[in-house]
Image (cartoon, rainbow, N blue to C red; front, side):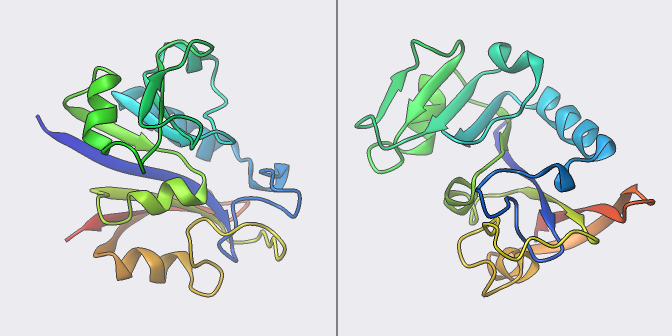
Length: 183
């Protein structure tokens, strides 16, 4: 089975994943969305994120992961984080870094931040866009490069992804997740 690439994010109605302090606010934390996210990570052979992102799950130390950073030339085993490899996309291909992490096939979960999501815009097989329609974070960070000038929907569509099924995760708080799939 080849590598498949899946992205996961929850955003506000204005496409932001953080508040003005560059942190995910409690306003974007919903039990059902977190469950959906963790279930996706359980299926992943590899998790990819930046130095300020993570999955916040107690099983973090048992998941193989790539941590995107400019602090290494290409890639290096992370002595301080079990199962992790530091990866500099300017110095090594994703395939080389995944191989260094011991992954040649299976699902890869991309979990942020914006620059990391941007690295994979032309590679996603599916991007799971969770939206908290009642939350607004006007001074927060957009989920992709180019947001808020463009909406997350416009960014995904411009990279060949099409919205398919949408599920309601939390009706009381108007939280949905939409699968954006490569055509």
